[in-house]
Length: 415
Image 1 (cartoon, one colour):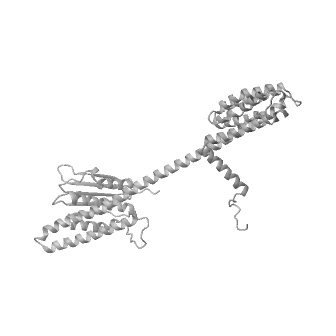
Image 2 (cartoon, helix red, strand yellow; image 1 turned 135 degrees about the vertical axis):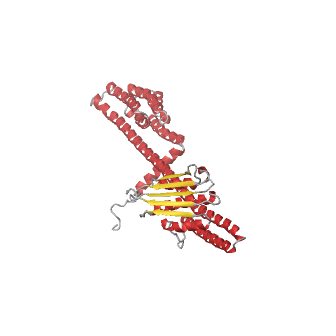
Image 3 (tube, one colour; image 1 turned 45 degrees about the horizontal axis):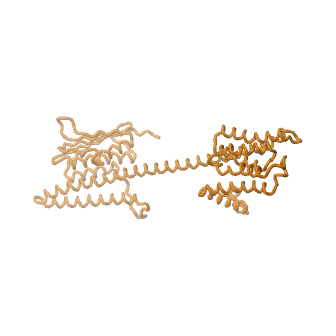
């Protein structure tokens, strides 16, 4: 007792658990066997009405005990059997019961089965519109008004009409309350379903974005290094017959580049694992400090590259990666498509505002692959768009020959 927090929910009492169990069983029966449930409910009220008829209990409250038994039996069934259709046609059930209720009132039989109208009115409130409910309520009260004036009690007609009218109104209010709760729960279920759909959509978008990022990284890593290896292999093949030492250097460079590419690919795959190994070495992404190493590898592959850096300024790691990858992709395209004798020039300038501009031009004779045919140019545009920059890529104007890639990243605006 002393360890329980005052806000902790208390377990349900045995009586409450028993009632909840019975309620759940009744709802399960109604949900899986609705016709059987309707027969059980209707059978209960029909049985109660017939017991009142066969036992003669109705004679204790009737105003005319000499009424024929066939009339009492007909009225008992007319006030109870229509309940079988109370859920599918609630207003029709009320219309069917009203004639028996009027005969019951006019003849003075005053059968207790007339109270079954409470159940019918409850179902009207639960399943139909307000106007239908008002009409049903008026029809249900009318027989009691007939009784009040045809067989006035000692307390007067007003006092004899008020109790049944209030009971019928209370039944209608309960039906409205249950309906409101059902609609509220249905709205909660629908809202939960919509949230699940939105969550799944967000997960799909996140997965698609992650797949695009991974494809872009793998393209940059593998595409560049394979292009360098291809250039080194071609140069080594030509040098093998004339200068074996140069061929050996090319093979060494190929081995080094291959190991670097394999190491970067392994690091990327380690990141993709759901449970990365504790000993996995996750190297940082390349930055502008690695530009010299990148260009040295391209030169070793046989592409002369001239670099010019104007100004100096710190860039966030994300922007450095973008600049690095775009220079890497531009030089890779020159290696693959520039043809023999091509040269490249990289000009990078820092502006006082914090913006950076990079221009990569080459003198190649080839043409880069179509934009829709790979991930090179689309990947560069995606990286540029992340930082609100602009990227221009295309052939140099006539009469010049070659290709130009121009990147501009504007000043970073603090959030």
